Image (cartoon, rainbow, N blue to C red; front, side):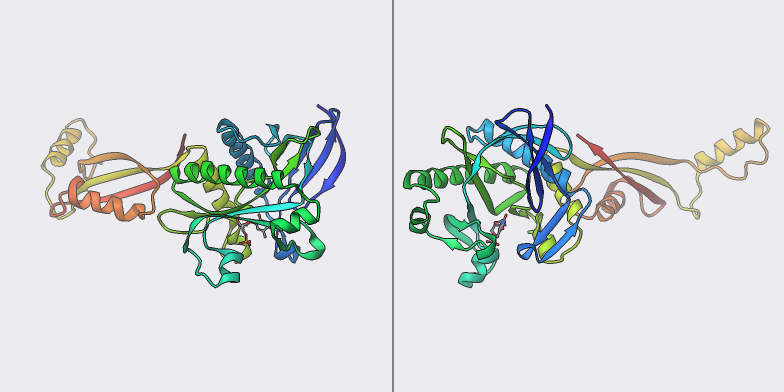
Length: 322
Ligand code: TMP
């Protein structure tokens, strides 16, 4: 497929024509923006993470019968999508109070809401994307009654599917924003992207942000956090590889070591000053919220070493295991 002219320059994506009229070539960019573009930075690696996460999520949703414009991921930063007319609405679903909902209604962040809320915002930069009600949508001819029902039904179906998927990998889906488009035939498809840029994701155990709030609120580096979301979605566990060496304390006589030293001397290696025999363990540990050092020391103290007579040291390295 041929990449054609630039059709649309967005904040986080560029859309290009292709040699097929119904297909669009999308390139995910590294630019991060917040506060409607007032805060802007280039963050190396963000484009490819969002492309991979979005591609994976659209595929999972498709398996659950929720159709999107996604056709195929063609490179780390690019995908092919079906051409649709974007409906100028941001459809936000909320499961837990956060962000503008918490601010507007003075409800503390983290408060669960009684049922998933669907909100509509009018995509209009000049007006700063105001929240609008269903009658506004109809009066402005943005969508019909029937289409609004479809948008709400699809948004709630996405919420159910994604909440379950994220829950399985230890993530709470707090809220998210969707966009939709119409095909030539008038079918409504899920569009745009679903990524940590457009969702609030909290770690189930620690409640830590695994999303763009890291950037919006200056909480640190966004890349390792987005990578963590991708790894969990791909089922990749971060593993530690630990080597533990247990030996007798210097003050304790090591009879086996002494015996080996004697034998080595008898073979003529008389420069060997000392031999101490110990135990060696190789341990693989899946990454968790518990500090690995603390856990290894506990295991050594309780099991691997006799702490009255033996001492231990350990080396920790990381390994990726699929
Ligand atoms: P909010 O709490 O700021 O209204 O955001 C709700 C959700 O929608 C949150 O997951 C972030 C996402 N969102 C976007 O993806 N783009 C936007 O322009 C806005 C305002 C929110």
